[in-house]
Amino acid sequence: MSDDAVLYVCTTCRMEGDAPDGPRAGARLYDALRAASSREGLRIEPVECLSVCKRPCTVAVASGDRWTYVYGDLDPVTSARVILDGVGLYAGTPDGIVPWRERPQEFRKGVVARIPPFPPRAA
Amino acid sequence: MSDDAVLYVCTTCRMEGDAPDGPRAGARLYDALRAASSREGLRIEPVECLSVCKRPCTVAVASGDRWTYVYGDLDPVTSARVILDGVGLYAGTPDGIVPWRERPQEFRKGVVARIPPFPPRAA
Image 1: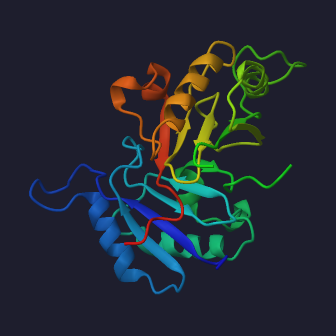
Image 2: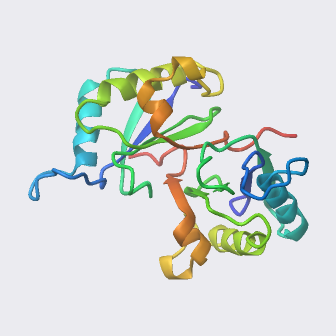
């Protein structure tokens, strides 16, 4: 199960240009990710607010033995493929830490935070 | 064990005014937290970089069944007590979500991100 990962997508993220009566940017990104994903072992979960409201759109990727990463500044339309590719690289590592040069540009620029695996390994 | 929580402290955070040959602000915050903490079930862990480098000092709090929160803009000297009080409120909730009005001002202003409990509950 160590390859399993969860991609949390903030569906309440708004962006300029969102139609007043249409789905928000975050919800559109969620739909795009669901449509584009074919990865076994990746669960895509909608979340009401990741508290990164100033940097829409926002996602987080978590996995049992890996660091959790939070990314912002993601385009609701064009970034789905990039996000899924980046998550694929993440799932291919033992600890979630993809070498800097291999990370998608969107992840390098958009990183909001990272959190160590929980629970921490015994000292 | 559901009361157990881990407070991750970025010890590589730098701030203006750090002595060139002294410990960095993040390391000083870590020391202050260790000195001030008397809470059973709270583990304080030093971390090399939480990737919130523009908002020092930075901490994250995680717990098995609770949301993870990341906070920045924390003072290395004066915030230790506030952080520990805030973590106490967090540990007193079932899901980690402290009502907004009860959160310390430092947590309201300094929130960087929040991530749902992992693994997600079955749909």
